[in-house]
Length: 134
Image 1 (tube, one colour):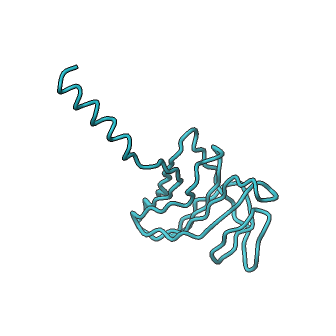
Image 2 (cartoon, rainbow, N blue to C red):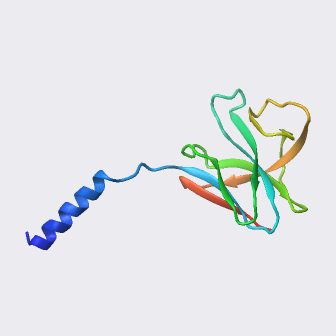
Image 3 (tube, rainbow, N blue to C red):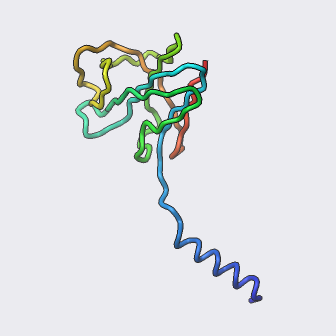
């Protein structure tokens, strides 16, 4: 083995010892010129219905925030967004409090409203970015 190949092999092995742990996430980004507020619903087996929901994340124009940090366990999740006179909604309705919340899907508290969430298909990705655009 040449000295150059040996150095490359040693460098590659040394790099393995310093590898950072992999992190999985879903993040929302604001692709509009107005502040938007978002909510997210995901598969959560510890909840009676099997689903949890959390909100509200405030996103300034151009800002991104992680809304779900563990590994994605189900390719489908749901989201809702509003701001700047626009909504990102769909046909999957759930009770959504006006104030910040972190609940199982069957739970709710007042005051709240029944909002329709959109389905998000993350496929086989472990990291996923959704940019909300006008």
